[in-house]
Length: 139
Image (cartoon, rainbow, N blue to C red):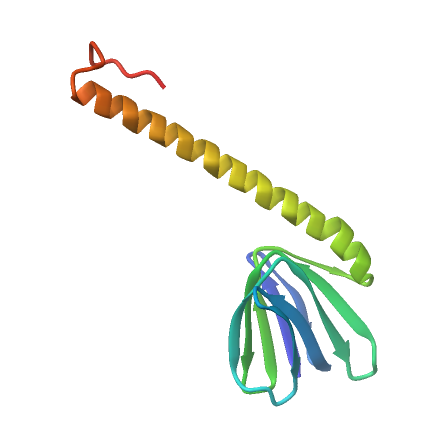
């Protein structure tokens, strides 16, 4: 089975000797074997794992993404960011912690931007109603 993992700027992994893949979406962990029905889901922040034909294991931390199975022979993962590693615990501890920090920072930045927009809208409404004493707006 082929496993292809890509991020916006690179092919992170293109493997042709994979016998199983484990991943995690919002509903939980799941596994894929050769011959699986076509499948599409969105991945959570997680570590994807797979097993090669010779028994070796592989791991990749993904920052969300789209996971698809095509024709029972191809597993495709498109993600915002991916990091290969040999130790799933290290990937989880280092990379996923960084992903969670970045996600939290993005959420805080989004909340701050929303507050600024609301403040600007309130000032515009106040100025349009004539309650601002002038047309100057301060942010």
